[in-house]
Image (cartoon, rainbow, N blue to C red; front, side):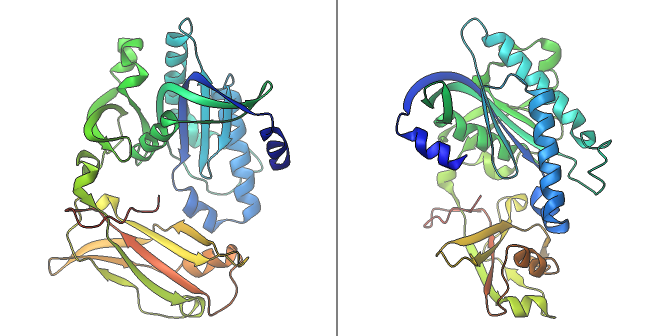
Length: 325
């Protein structure tokens, strides 16, 4: 597939196209993939991708995997706009309701799997890269915004912004959504945008503060694989400032790529605890799963450095360190 892509680039052209874009993310997929065999991870993702595309979005113009989910693109015209928006929202709501049972009767999926998803959706003009009749990719602000909205749809649910066209939806559908206003890093940093969220979505307070007024300090602690595999004190981070929103604290595991190509491998890690220690904000990271995780990546050398990074949002205008999302 990658060779075909490279070959077709020579004749590729870009053209503008109106699309509805969705970003579907499997919540808890990173943690799930550390607890099952790689063949089981592949089987699960294969089954849910097929079901999402065949049973919920069968008329998609384009789609591609995003690691923990799918990017889905559906083109529209003036004539089809209303029908396409209504269909995309209805299919997304149905997927939210049915996702936890998509593999319930699948004999090949006899292990615990993630049960929730987050979906971001918007519409607008994009750049379609095509070679002849074959679409190679889409790019543009719409795709970036869809990804940002998907990150807001936590712990699960559907989030779309006002540009999708809530006025195109039936009143009975619109009543399923609550409205809020948020700032979006790199897209809407000065003026907030209106979003529509299904019940269950919890918008973080940090999203309601202009990004220019939020800093993301990073605190690192580094250990060897040998230390992580053996008994060791629990890594404890005493944060220098109180986070604006503790739900936005992120812990990343960072290791050198065992292929020695100069790159690093980065994984979000959820087994940590945030609390106040005598009034001081503190993050305690439980390391039980880390050794198994990095060894599944192919890391074997006991002296390999493993960095645990904690990022968190704080008020201020100090030099910014953006989190790795």
